[in-house]
Image (cartoon, rainbow, N blue to C red; front, side):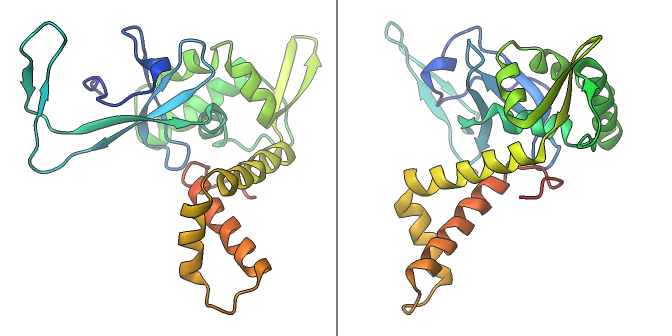
Amino acid sequence: MTRPPIALAYPPDVAHAATRLWVLPHPRTGVPTYFATSQDGTNAYELLVTRPPTRSWLLRGHDDDGYVVADGAMRILSRIDPAFLLLGIFCVLDTSQQYWPLDDWLEAATDVHVQRRSMSAWPDMAAFVALPSMQTHLDRICATQEADGGRVYRLDETRIRAMLHAKAQRVCARAPEQVAAQAWRTLDASASDADVDSAQQEVARQWIEAYVPLSVRW
């Protein structure tokens, strides 16, 4: 995949020349997708592109007359939990009952992704997982043990479900109007408070599932 032009809308922590775009499997679909990380690796962002049929951009700096970009696509970096990207990488293997050294686990997962997408390699995958900040996110979704050769990992379904349920609660708390508006489309005027709460939880769940591997059951 060729590298795209710089996004026209981006968060401050990736608004610098050294920002790297990683090609990683989308957590839901496995399709190669561009992601960026902040300099400290704490935050991750998905590169989203909308392409109107007719549009161009006039870009102007502080000290020049500006110029026209004929490609009218709007590129936006939208925040995504790095733990979702790790789930997208590792959930292609059933490791719920088996502990793996991280390097071996990554190699096996990469082989599956290569076979699924008929790609020669996923060169960004190993470097992304090796970021120091990813250890924190691995601990959120994995059980670990100390072995003779070092730490070993497996996906922990209990931790994953707890993380996803907590996210659903936060979605309802942080976007109550949007969640309620969509939830009421499935309800009638006689709906009880419990019905409303259940419908809102389902809306939040559906939004989150757009970034959760199909193999994850929660």
